[in-house]
Image (tube, rainbow over all chains, first blue to last red; front, side):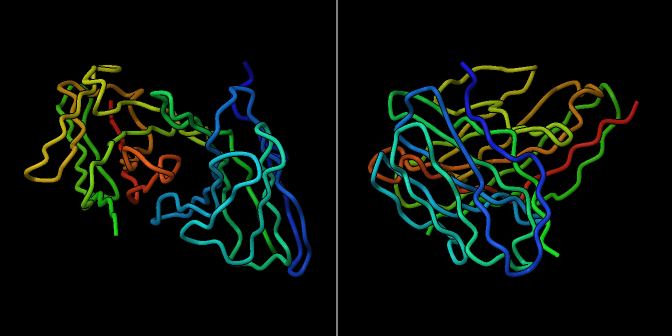
Length: 112
Length: 112
């Protein structure tokens, strides 16, 4: 099992550019989430999904879109990047069958 | 609203000394509590979950519902314990099962 994988590992964008952060899991987990990690603020939930075709907003959803067309994939789209979106982004997945949340390796994004 | 508080941003101890990382939470339902550890620039890894009541790498944590706390303890700290530690809370059921609420994190440094 590869677990949770994310691409790219690093990305630099200019203000106004758009991009998609990719996330995939091979554990057949029904729940998937995106978090951003900022110094002094811990991890904050951006969006999450309880299954294919179902998504919902988290604590800080503005400026981000998600979709979940398959169980395995949960891409995060930045529509028009802003410097405030400079952060480390973690994708995560979990199962309702007695599981805990597993995290991807993270994507370090810088918006200039 | 649920909240997790880790009052110490930084914690420094010497090797062999006891260490306690504090975590307090507020939640009206039935929560699950976790400790995650993040070594330098790596992904978050599960350290402990309260329902397991196990000891991992010498760490233990007991859920105290009266004090709404889930402090992490280790009797003899090691240099390899130096890392960022996050306390996190999850709703024990329902469609919020995939969501985690994190504390701000505590950076533990163990000096030789």
